[in-house]
Length: 367
Ligand SMILES: [Zn+2]
Image (tube, rainbow, N blue to C red):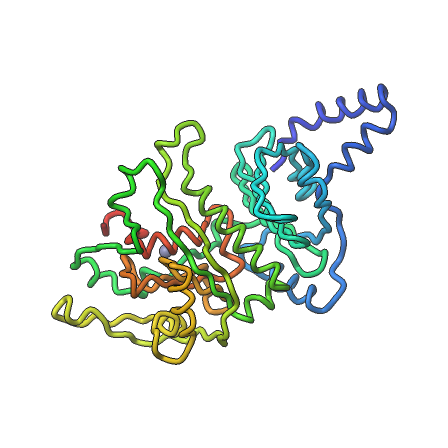
């Protein structure tokens, strides 16, 4: 939130500026505003707007157009999220991924912050932590975007541990085998280990995101946000988590979403007794290479040498994600993440679910 104590100083500054320069300074300042209010104008946009406004995590929402030329042309922009949350933001880095395709990093002048936009042609998406506040910019279709203020306390992260048979998996030796990656050998390496990720999204997820470009852009942002979450210390890289997440391929997969769960029996030989877990049917369908459902995922995984497969969905979970296994083998390294939670500020659903596959739990005392 804006520190109102600074307002008198701001007004004084504006008054002095106006006296010295007449109008141009004020016009310049306003022209650096990133967002301009506009309203939803078609049924698809209104549908997406209603879904966001009714979300439990939404504190406030406005619909805007974005002055995108500021992102690649200005060192400093006014991030006018809401009247009580407007920040001058300094660009710190642009990471170009292709023509008209980049990740934009910036920091607010007077707050600890992480501000990240992903731009892919006409699609713009963003995830921000500013002080203790969390915000998203989410495309609603065409040139319309939602600016959302999120309530972190209402966020439901993950159902992995409540479904994957925690008690049984405590008895076994966890040996993460995500390709060449394991947590055990990461700390001694100067170069970060790379986790290669294949992302497949459902037609429903693409439709809810508004377009193929929008969902691919959301995936691009999620990858960048995940890698920033591993980067813990700007001043000392040796304190970082030596992991890098690389989305090697992303594509739509032919699948009709279902939120059904079913009992799944596993680890019988390993434990001498069977573990019954209540998995998402979609996770099992994703993981099973021979059930006739999403089987081409396994060919794609081989072609792109991906360690982990993420199914990106729109309406399977009422939380952000679920992983197939805690401490997954190559055969089990699958997870599901809802498309609009991929790059949640502070939630980092992508490194969270990948972390489960690597053997990480929510509660330290279970390790
Ligand atoms: Zn979790």
